[in-house]
Picture 1 (spheres, one colour):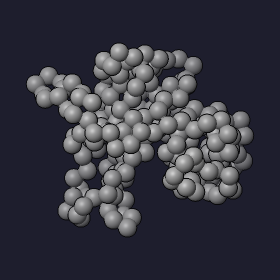
Picture 2 (cartoon, one colour):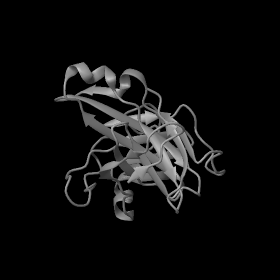
Picture 3 (cartoon, rainbow, N blue to C red):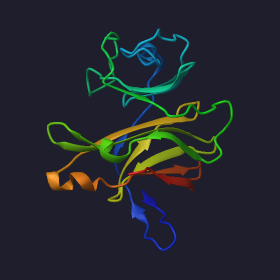
Picture 4 (cartoon, one colour):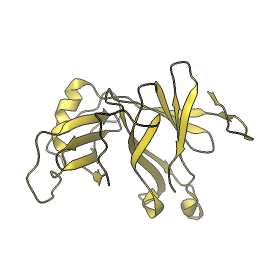
Length: 206
């Protein structure tokens, strides 16, 4: 896919390295109760009335309840075939809470609204190999039919959008050498309408 460039820029040819999808209803039911604000080995009783905003085969789950907004990264058993969340007692690997809780009763004022994102040193992790990662949580307007995440070299992934308009991005990329670690490239989100026209773009903070 060729993405039109901004003023004075060159078009970018995208190379899709991954396409994410939403979980089906059975998989949602297996994980949503594991991602509730206040229920990740934290003080206070869990609020079982959490509203599921997004559940993706990332596998990320985004939930809103009276305690706020939380997103969980839940480990899955197999990387081939449909995800297996049958071991629902396994704890989440990661936990994020947004610094604000958007009003989902109203559409966003822009085609892409990001309300939590990775910034600064949190963008690199030391696994077996140094790894860049990007995460962002937000929502899109009803006019958006396709959401793309793109880094400057043209690598891209398709991001699914839930019926609520919510989306969740979690993308990692192994760094070749330790000298590259501080050079994590910016990641941009592009929203397209049903005709393929770019409606809006947003670059995540570095």
